[in-house]
Length: 337
Length: 116
Image (cartoon, rainbow over the protein chains, first blue to last red):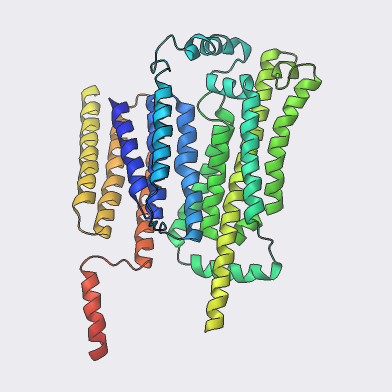
């Protein structure tokens, strides 16, 4: 019953997103879409996925889209032509995809390949082999460590792409001007600044909890990285980019992003050196289970560091561009005056 | 004692859910942005605080109680702040409360003739 309600709400929101012309409302609806999918995942008992969806889909991606909108403008461009050919292709592709799902086993059926092949092995043996209560973490970080490595590399690549497109080399003398603009802008945001100052330590602490509690409950490097970076983003929004850059150096954060991926890979190399397979943590310690624990802890740490650093880099790049835009606009205004 | 606890808890839960529902009705029924935000902000903060207090009476476990207290503190901190920021942002972008809108326009016209 609750599944039906959530799914129909998802459909309604998807249609609303297509119909809307106001991009700000579209971004907000996308956030709501993410939150609804998260509650849908909770209803299906996939707590880890829900956690990630709530942190990434509803949280930080909405924020990044909002920052992007501040640069591009709020309204969607009006299209005059009616793209019937595109509609035709989309309908055919969608029809084929739905036709493809007819061959799939019914939702939740016990004799589906996924339930007869790998899932029982993970559920039955992971406690002896890995020894941590959260099976999702042991699948993600140990059995499927190579896939997760790929995911981290994808995130790293995305960060590098944003950096290559939007990186603004900063000149020293502009810093003072930008800082003064920021100060005048943020002087009156007293209430939210104080509340944020009170909350940021707890957000950071919660990120660390999620990071290191991933073995026992829902959580892990991806979620922790996003939560950690969201605290930094909050700080940046309220205290200005130049202040935040004083706290977190751009060079340092780039170094950390690369370091996380490298660290992850090095754990795999270390297990190769010790005579096991790539990402075979059994050989990292004398006791196989202790080795697994160590390996999972280390690679989750690498994931968390990379994700946090990349999210901060993306936000900094967007915000830096925005600041540059504002700066040039101010200059123009001054010239015209 | 047991009965007393469940009665108080039920009372708090009832008030809380009533406030939440009235907040939802308010968002739909009120005329302009500020009154709607008032409905959403004030009643939701108080409503969820009431619901959490009601749940606290039912938590036998100390850990659950502590978690509920933390959630309550978070809501008491964040709820009013978000309403405040929302109203402030709307006001800064030039959205005036309904009624004041027409008033200020007529004020502008009067400003040219008499400075009141």
